[in-house]
Length: 144
Image 1 (tube, rainbow, N blue to C red):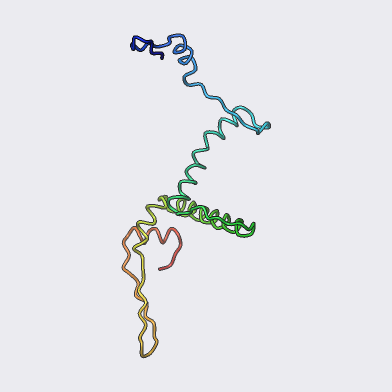
Image 2: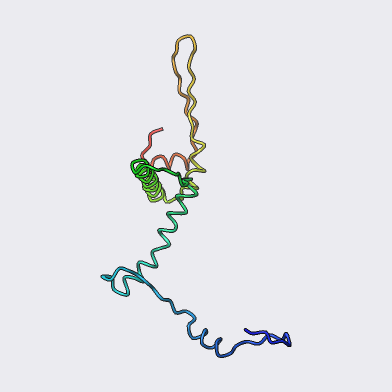
């Protein structure tokens, strides 16, 4: 689009037609020479899964960058984040619920420990569970 001095905007028709021809065309760039064109496209279309995992790591798992300077602590931090991601994916697949939903439901599952000050005897009082809480814990094979 160009705006001449008369301040009446006009559309560059030649450029518009050229742009219209390119609508819907995608280009893919990769350094993976062994992949076929179709494999490159399939891998690209699976990127959403990776992006979803990064969102899950940032939101549901609440992982944040931590600034380590030693190789050992950097590797340990990455391992912990990766393990949390694996456990989270296992929970999602096993229960068919998102981590956010699981967290919301299961945060109410608690037990109270009471210690008698005279006998030092500890009594554990579990909370009465809802049907959905019982179903989730059974799917995860957790005893409560």
